[in-house]
Length: 268
Image (cartoon, rainbow, N blue to C red; front, side, top):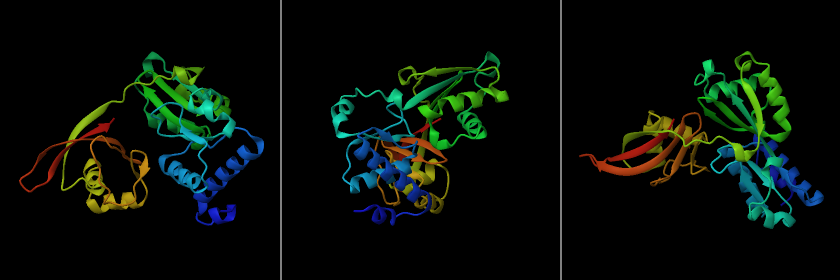
């Protein structure tokens, strides 16, 4: 399959994304070097992994700097590094950097994920250069591509909201990862179909839930879902872009009408 045949399947931003991936694969083959994409959301990652499968390229890993990262890059490596990668001996600090923002006492607990992301956009940094933003009441750890670290740090320091904050450059091993907080809710559904569950967890109509699914905003265990008939099971992780992330729990009861009472954990 040649380049133009592959690209003919995609349009606009997806076409550009795939084109850049093909360049990376070519560089790995020609230069025998490690190459990587910018940060991808779950839909973009699945799209590129589909291309990799079509090309029978298996010498890559998807990582965002830590095990449960949502935003990831695809790291493509030459075959000579296969053993190093598989044995987890590759130093991903050559690709990622961690920018830690420590807030002064009077601002602790004041800023949310949205505030940090808004600040990054304000200084003119493209979202694709920044991975997960791990927040706490004391501040945040930003996972960024190493080449963007200095620009991001210097830019954020100039903002009024961070004028009294402290900035540190850290390695991935120093990430401040806390157990995510969840809120348990009960929902009543006619079946374990994804459209039924999405409708209830984001409090919208079944028709609107189907629209969101068709807009490619719903993922189950990081896999893009495009059909409302997809059956979901216990412990599946559902992500609805723009609405949040949820973990499917147990069916705890049924109603007189035969509907199911399902426990769901909402990440907050």
